[in-house]
Amino acid sequence: VAVSLCCISMVEVSVVGACLLALGIWTLLGPKKWGKDALARASPGLTSLLLLWLLAIYTATSLQHYYGIIPPVLQSIGLFAFQSPPPVFLALTGQLIAVLFAARLSRNTARVRQQASIAAPDPEAQTSAAGPGSNHTPASTHWDDLRGIWKQSSATLVACTWYAGFWAAPASWLAVAVSRLDLLHAVYLGAIALHCLGACVCPTPKIPSPNAIKPRHRLIRLFSSFHLLALYLAMCGQLPGLELLQRPELEALLKLIGIWQPTIDRDCLPVLVSLLICTVHSVAGQWLARAGHVPLGAAAAAGCTPDGKPNTLMAPATAQQLQQGQQQQQGQQ
Image (cartoon, rainbow, N blue to C red; front, side, top):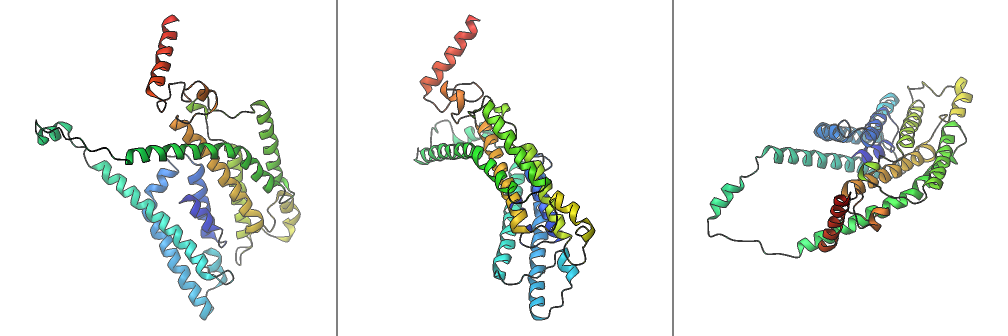
């Protein structure tokens, strides 16, 4: 949902789009309690607002096409009318997809609340209801094996994504840095230099413990978020009735900073793609740390999970031998 909010804000520049972009970025970067959980709680209202916005845009597009009565100020705020090219239905479809994502989040949130409100069944009551002679066990199916294969494949895919992020993230910073020559884009060159320095100090990426993986690229993601918001607000300053920032007397200063007459395709999209790549890399690392069953680094060589415990996905005999060895070492100490 957060990614869809960021994407639909790039379809057309407006004040409402700036608010949706800020909400999406806050959901991606903010703490879970005030970010993802808050978005889940507000998903019913957000779905209603996005649906009303979609209907208003559809109405404004129709009226503007036939009558041309929508004033420029309302279009700057968010009641804009799509025009071809590209085809109008593509933009409206993107808006509809964002509404469907928000509706799905609202439905899942309501389902979780409903399940949490239902009391768990009493196992003793179920045993007595089944009767003393009841010894029925469900027949084993191949679904358990398929679930195990799916989990292992998902873990492998996440691990590959995490390792690929060490190359994809610096490549995205380089693409952003060379797009323009100004102070804001020069920061990405500094991020590349620090990344290369860190790679020289610790060339092999590994997971020593689940708590050791913090959100990667935190500073560059925070900077990219403010950079993206600054670019978007600068574009809002070019809209009719909102000429606040893009003034001729500030041209030299704004060019030096990097927010003079930005565009979506050349300025905003590269920063947004870089931010999403770094976020995916961070999420993949946190998932691996929580799962603790993907053999990475020195922990895999020892046959253990990243927190130093025996790997439960290994053969039972192997896991038991590792546990016995640890207990013997503790006894000797």
